[in-house]
Image (cartoon, rainbow, N blue to C red):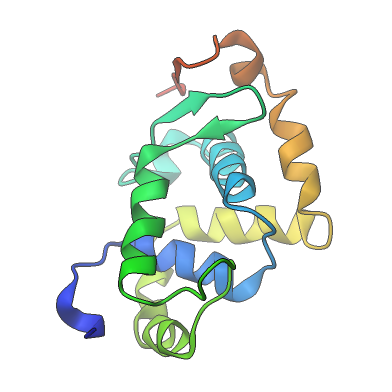
Length: 147
């Protein structure tokens, strides 16, 4: 399949960057990480970020993030059954990575991920104690503050 047969957004490139830089163990961890990153960023830092998160029993879920994973898997940019980039995925990421420097949210994500670096399992633990997560009802959308 041709790498350029799909339309990619900065959300795709951000996910590629996270996967190229850090060792996430499960997709659930990335959903939870992006929730914590979105919730801890100022609304001015995330003007184009449109993730909707829903509360689950063990964390959050975003259909947008899951759709991005599906796009990357369909185009064979991810190793099957792993959260690692294929050679083609890594090559594509290196070609488009410079686009992220114009956005503040990816920088915020990288700073947050560096805080967790070797303990990414903590992400799954910390999301359970986040006030927005605790207030929400299971299966319902978590509303992030806009101001």
